[in-house]
Length: 324
Image 1: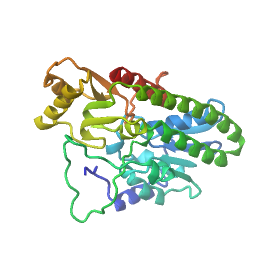
Image 2: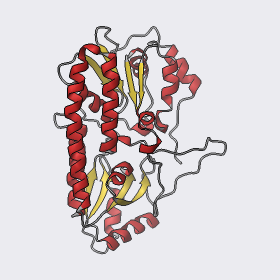
Image 3: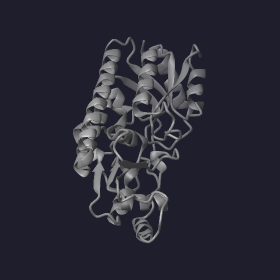
Image 4: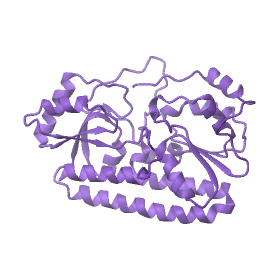
C-alpha cells in the first residue's frame, strides 16, 4: 500500500525540542483553553461544540488546504501542539508523526484525543482494493503487517456523532466553567447529524440504483457502508496516484453502461481527467461529472457556508440525484 514519506523520528524529536525557546504567532494564551485539531472535520465538530459564547482558543493545522495524506507539521505547528491544552487528531497512518511530536510536548498535562482509538475496531473499516481498481505498490519487505484502516472516519455521520460526543466529554472535563455550554451545543448538533443520517437512510433505502461510479480516489467507504451502497472506483481513498490505466478506465466505463449510471463522481478539487475519460468510453457518453466533498483538504474553511454539516448535506443532494 502507498505510504507517504514521514520525517524520521529522530529528526522530528530534535526539531520539536529545539523549538522550546521559540515564540509563535499561534502561541497559547494561558487565560483560555487552547484546543488544536489536525483536520477540518474535527475542527468544525469542535467549533460546533464550543459555540460562540465560550472563550476558547481553537485552531487546526491543515487550514492552508494541505491534504491529510501528505501533511508534515511546520515549526510553528509543533509549537502550537506542544503548548495546547487539548489536541485532537484522526489517529491513522497519516498521523504517525504525532507520536514523536507529543513525546516532546511542553504541556505534560495535555488532553490527547485519538479518534480512531475512541471509535475502536468495530466502527473502523479496512482499506479495500475493489474489482477494477488500480493496485498500489506492495509494502516493502520487513514493514509491519496489520490491518490498514481507512482514515476518512468523518465521512460516516454515525462516526461523527460518536466523535462529537467524545470530544464534548473531554472538553467539559477540561473547562468546567463552560461545561454546560458545551453540553447544550453538543446536544443540538448531534440532533442535526442524526437527522441527516436518517435522511440518508431513507434516501438510499428507496433508491432505484445503489451503486456509485468514481473516476477518482474513493475516500467514501464509511458512507457507502452506512447505507448499504456499492461502488466502483479508480483508486483507494488514500492513493497518491493521479493517472489511471486504460484497463481501469474501460472497466469503469463498462460498469457505467451495465448499471445505466448517469453520473460519474469525483472528489472536490479534482481535474476530472479520469472521470472525463470514463465518460468518453461509455456508449452514451452523456454522464454528468459530479464532485462529492471528502473534506481531506479545505482551503476556504472560513467561508460562511463552509461547515462539516453543509458539506455532508451537499453530498446527500448529489447522491440522491444520482441514485434516482
